[in-house]
Image (tube, rainbow, N blue to C red; front, top):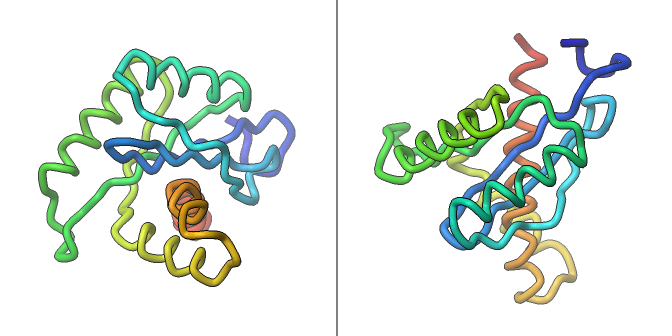
Length: 147
């Protein structure tokens, strides 16, 4: 696959998966920045995969990063296991590489950043999943570049 920032590079998608919503972010065409997309309201596995498939096709995604909820200690719990299963389902369904990435502080940071805006509490709640997905993607991209 071409390196980020070169012609032919495909985008990377990040997901902040919750029980009710999936926050979505994607890299720009050059693979430099992360931008938030519309949050997906979860319905059931088939509909969730259908909605994600539309995003993957529209943005020509080549890799997926899924936030992995760890305990503060770094240990995995039941939510981590659910995300591992979700990531396995994504890989099996779409055949793309799926990476799990520590998301421990993304929702906290997203809430902090959004509190600094003029958004109403209702709109802030709707934006937090998108912002968390952006933070997951930025963190993953930063770690990948420093390797």
